[in-house]
Length: 101
Image 1 (spheres, rainbow, N blue to C red):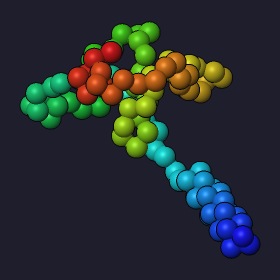
Image 2: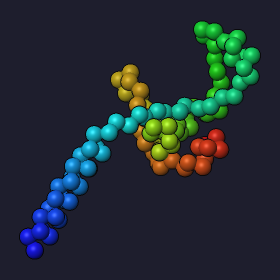
Image 3: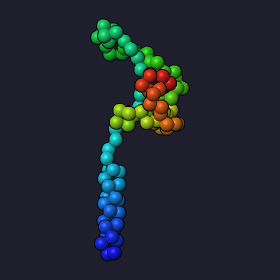
């Protein structure tokens, strides 16, 4: 019986160690404002000050990616001259892959 209790305690300790290891992992967050498709010739002609029109409207939700995978949608917030994203909902991976809103 002592062996069972010890095993249960050991797995519990290793479980909390695993959780703390997972919590220590860094995740790269990216925000996709919109997309554009351009011919290579046009892209090569672009210089400083060039404007690339995106497929997104002003008040549309942006995509939030974690390690290049869509995880949420959000709205741009500007507070004290800092830009932030407010999460509004979970992402639909199929919408992201299709390039739709």
